[in-house]
Image 1 (cartoon, rainbow, N blue to C red):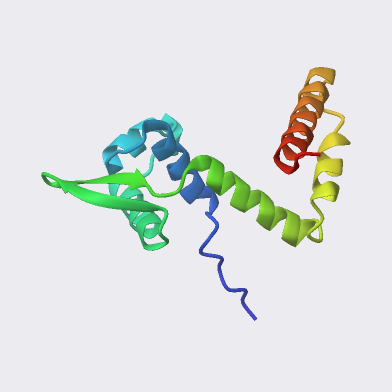
Image 2 (image 1 turned 60 degrees about the horizontal axis):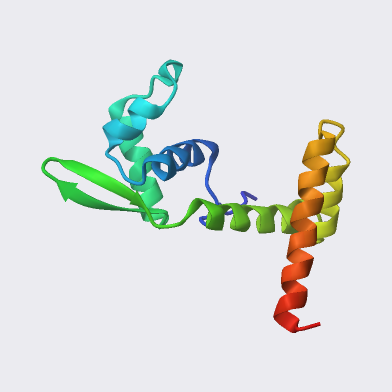
Length: 135
């Protein structure tokens, strides 16, 4: 049985296009295609199809500007990152965010500076939570 596609998540190529749109805030098919690596070599029609799919999925909206459609992201990149991490935690880490973080922290590729930055982020979050609850 074929698994139903999750319309809340992006495919690799859709994410590639969204990253470019997030970087420029809005743009036409041509604008996005010009930002892709030269060796990507996608046809205009392929780019138009990908952006149309992103619009159907609710990730972008379009408006007419002369003959071109101008696409604008409807979802901020940080919101999508949160959604993706929640999905990853749920599907790969048994809905236990601590396991996801443990896997990341156990990565031998992290430098001491990376780990210090992670610690600072956790400490800040704990402080903020204490401030909000007044404890």
